[in-house]
Image 1: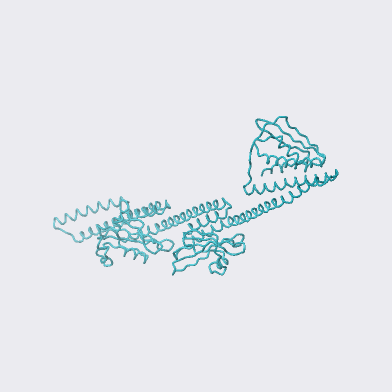
Image 2: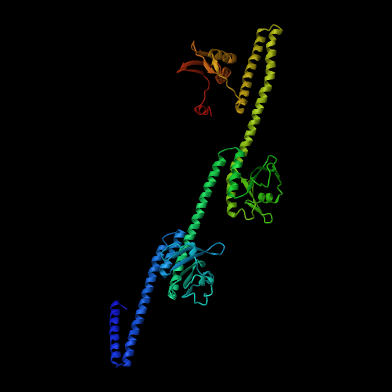
Length: 555
């Protein structure tokens, strides 16, 4: 009915009422006419009621459209829940509203409790009919009661009586074919506030709201999982840096056990590695109550060990009677088990799948660090053995060298020697000196590697040092036919140095010069002062070094 038609009908109705009133006043009533006028009024009332119903439906649909836009504007779960509840209260005209969601244990928990003013209700005002909410959840059907105090279905319920509940409406929240919760509204003062059309509107809106809630919940869960994954990756990266910051096996193992115990929420942990005999030996433990001791040999036939060696994943053993859980994580390097990590906890529900997964990731990252540490330890052991060998050889060579030098020197005292014999004896003595230099070099290498090389500085006359170095190599220089040139100023200042080491350095430089210079070459020893410094250089006409070889000096 248009507005113009409505105004005309109302005007006719007023006129009919006036005519009927006059008939009553005059006492001349025409029953037929009276009935026609009443029928006309009844038709007008029916038209008005239908128009009002249509208008209310249009308003409801408009409200549904508006609130649908609102609840789809956010993916924050709590924001969506608040928006849904406020929209439902506004849509139904209820006094209060509650939104409940199903938890992992199958219980309905109140997530939102709001009033008409869009304020959150305090905990002491959260009161509703659990009978109705449970009925709606279990049947998947909405519930409407115009007056719960007189409704035979609920009148005897304690909550209905205690809180004087009257108008109540509830509808299920369904998403992807599953009921995920219940929305509940009421008015404790007025009876008959809600009708069947209100329940239908509530159910229609609840369907839309459930989808928005489920999307927000999935987003929140996904976001939480993503954040947890990011935190896990950050922790793993930090562990990587710590594990690879040093080649010290003991430190690497302690860092590994400490962090793995924390991530796995274990009480204690142990690490067992393959020793040189191929046995599985406990290397380290962490925490209190470890099931193994350091140095203990684990037999491959132990059930937990045997299963860990056979499978690639973690192995969990739970003893409900002892209230204990044991977890074994194999550590593999190039498809071979190089170690086993054990974790223990005094609770049978320990080591969830998520914790086992992250511990397996830690084990995978630790494999390279442990292998590098083991190789580094082996290299250090070999290096120590080499140093000890060099030290022993250098010491043992000194005894025959001293004997050879002594007997060669005594030959001159035994009898006269001809010139050739004297040259032979001198050659022996010169070679003994060369051997002394080599042995001293070996001893120095041993001292350097063991950190025991000592440098004792004092004021040194360079002329004396140069003379000693020349005496040690001049015979070999002359044998090769080299020309030796000295460019030394007549006056040199004293220098702070270790005289023995300085002689050793010069001898090494001159030795290299005559060894790697073809016969009849030239070797030049030059000394000069510059800016309070004294410089010594040895030059030769030998093969020299390539730029690539020079770049490696000192590395």
